[in-house]
Length: 70
Image 1 (cartoon, one colour):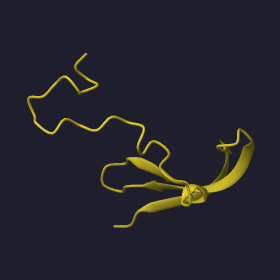
Image 2 (cartoon, rainbow, N blue to C red):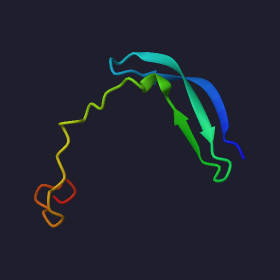
Image 3 (cartoon, one colour):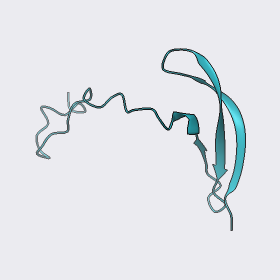
C-alpha cells in the first residue's frame, strides 16, 4: 500500500503581500482517502505569533487568564 503523491504549482500571498508561485505536493492516504498539502517554500518561515498569544493558565481551574473564558 502506497501513498499517492502529486506535485503541482500554486500561488501564495507571501508575508510582504506579494503573490508568488511555488510548488506544493498533495498527498493522499490510501486507507482513509484524506489529503494533505505540503508547502515546501514555507519551511524557513518563523512562527510569528510566539510571544503575542497569551500563555495558558498554570492551574486547570484558573479561568481569569484563559482567552476562552471571557
